[in-house]
Image (cartoon, helix red, strand yellow):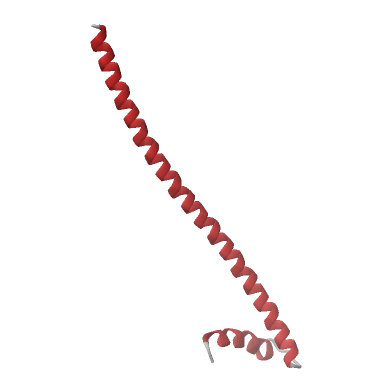
Amino acid sequence: MGCWDGLIFFPVYRLIYGSGWTIDNGGQAKRLLEERNDEQVSHLSLQITQLRQVGYRVVSTQKLCTANTYLTAWERNLTTRKDQWVARRSGLAS
């Protein structure tokens, strides 16, 4: 029995023996397992969607940080050039 078989077996066992009523046929058990499986699949699908959104935010944040670093370097370069221009300009004026 694989690890997934145990996960499926336990809820059926509880349905048969733990709740005081019995499953009259395999079809009812199968239907209950399919419903539980559908719930688990939809929950996992939601988690995957949420993880994708977080991943997109992380990538966007990384791109934003890279852009901010580039703009900061560009701003420093312009400030240095402006200071040099002002220094040359004031040297010409005197």
